[in-house]
Each structure stands twice: as structure tokens, then as C-alpha cells.
Length: 107
Image (cartoon, rainbow, N blue to C red):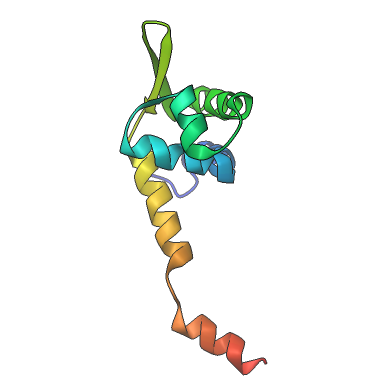
């Protein structure tokens, strides 16, 4: 594979993932499929906002939707996405003593 292969599609994926609200919805869906109502309750976001974010995630093929009677159930299309989000969170939350020491020297 060439180094530039797939970079445009990957950049587009990161644009979609660049929303705190969408990351929250993905974290919720990583544990179990859920309806818009369930995601609204668990996320604390309004129903229209949850629906809008789910539409964006669906158009990016990150989540899928299936019907259970009148209820739409959303799930991750691929659990690689959950790993990407988890890895990014772990990276963000880990303490880096070198960075802390460097910032301490400038104070």
C-alpha cells in the first residue's frame, strides 16, 4: 500500500468523528444497539440533535439502522470505530510525564 492510499477517506472519517456529540453516541452504541429515544435519554441531547447526528453517522457508514416494528434501532456498522474512539480517548487521557515536565520548566 502506498503511504497516500486511503488518506482522503480517512480524513473524511476523522471529520465525522470530530464532534463530541457523535463520539458520545458512538460510545453509547459500542455497548449495545439503541433507539433514538434511548440515545436521547442516555446522552442528554435533544431528540432532533440525536437524530441529526445519527443521520451523519449513517451517511458515513459508521452506524446502521434496522426496524423493530415502528422503532429504529441503531448499531455500530463496524466495531473498528469503537476501537478508534477508545484508542483516541486513551491517548488523550494518559499522563505524559515528559510533557508535564516540559510545561513545568516554562513556568
